[in-house]
Image (cartoon, rainbow, N blue to C red; front, top):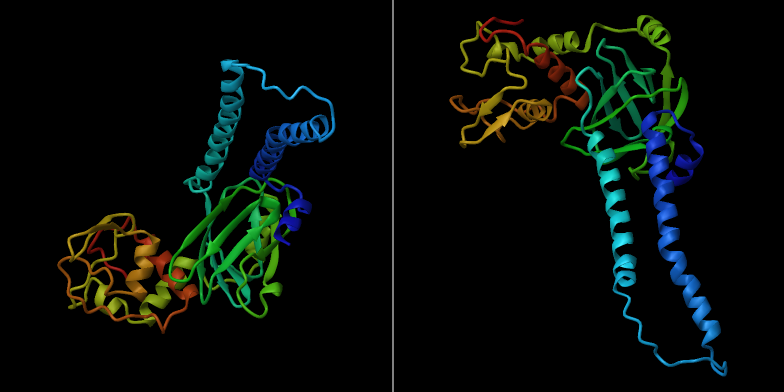
Length: 317
């Protein structure tokens, strides 16, 4: 079914055109490499069939260059395709720094998207045409897979970890998005639409969409509601790591390791605080694993990321 969707979806990005060209090139290469084999099998079967008068003596022919060429040419062709496909694959994991950051949570059986400005939508994702978009994906329950056939992109969404998908849609319009991983009884209805708009239309959509503040602002409210400021606030008497300037910095751990405070580290620190205890701090952080959903965790992560340029000890509410 996913292959049929890809075949009929059209192309909504430059990447989609590159993938189609690669696929057609591989198909042509497969035909060129396999057709001579089947042609020769048929020819030999007819020429040397039983009862057919034919010279069956083994003529000596030691054409070294011919023998080398029929091994070297297919090898070099496949290496070229390997390098070509590897370049496309590596590009999928290097989103531009200026990419629009959107969060997505997959759950049985819907997709929930969160925009930086706080706008939220279910089973529909609005993006501006011509702008790079990076989607951080999380699962609330089981393994899902976000698949947009028109973009030729698919990314698994695994419980307990963040995955990312980035794209630059060039053609305005609506395109199907589906879950490409069987995730339960109603897996077949877990889908929606990617709506690509002109930058002006997207700006109008953002303005018209209801919001309770930016994602970081919602995270700040949640930060206070959950009592996080009682330990991580500047005036707190509890010895807890400061969050200002934390994101993107190296963090020494109690076990001697050093990790980077990225999105995954922040998530794990909230839901699995005993897994990576910061050096010099007591292991007193409670877990919020059964308290907060993935959407709330993403809001808290957005808030902590907003403090990246703040000075430690500067304080926050």
